[in-house]
Amino acid sequence: MKHDAWFRCSDGCEGRWELTEIIYRCPSCDGLLEVKHDVEILKGRSSAAWMSLFDRRYMRTSWPYGSGVWGKKELVYPQLNDDNVVSIYEGGTNLFWAERLGESIGLEDLWIKQNGNGHSGSFKDLGITVLVSAVKEIMSRGADIKAVVCASTGDTSASVSAYCAAAGIPSVVLLPRNKVSQAQLIQPISNGSLTLALDTDFDGCMALVEQLSKDKRFYLANSVNPLRIEGQKCHVKSDAARCDYLPKRQDSQQYTGALRQYRDPWIGFKHLWASGLEFYRK
Figure (cartoon, rainbow, N blue to C red):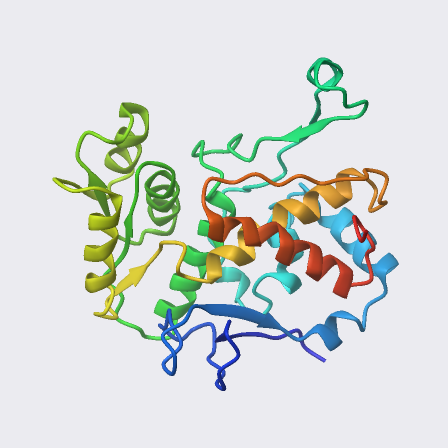
């Protein structure tokens, strides 16, 4: 049986939408959507087989599976045509043993992950590779998408502009004037994005982006789009591999800057458990 994934309402309303449909909210309740995977098919492969598959792919040169995201393609976007994957081999960031910091705060075995150690300097690369790949897939089926659009204070725009440049897809970035660092401002500009600084805050930029994305020619790239979670959850899977899939660390503390992104590692854990991998199960 083939692996499958689709959109559904996160609040439980009836309905199923393909990942190639341009939809961001539930038509019934206006709530957020989530990506649902066929867990029974995932269970059809043993935990040992999953571990072997992930390890064979990890950071190798076989396209696109060397990526820290696309090496877990069955658990991300299984139906995506490999030719439409837009990847700069994101992920694979190391777990650093913070021995001295751990000693200073009374932790014997402290490990730290910095997802910003990537090509764009943004931890959001993990989600944006999935989103821009999905846009390329949608466009390959004839959709008239003119640009990927986002509101940002730096991280999202850095990542969106980089991946859209790699894919040859136009991008539009709305930023609050004088509230973005110079280093992150130069990234969308140098990547060829139409970059607009507005006299408002992030929420004002986001409101305009949501209005713009009501026109299906402009694809929404902010975190309301559930496709981003599918990539951002993958750092948990990489951490599991780093620890040989064993629950030898008693606690996994996840810190993020946005509440919705706190959910990403939780979903990553759930997918590991569904695949029979008991990493951090307690």
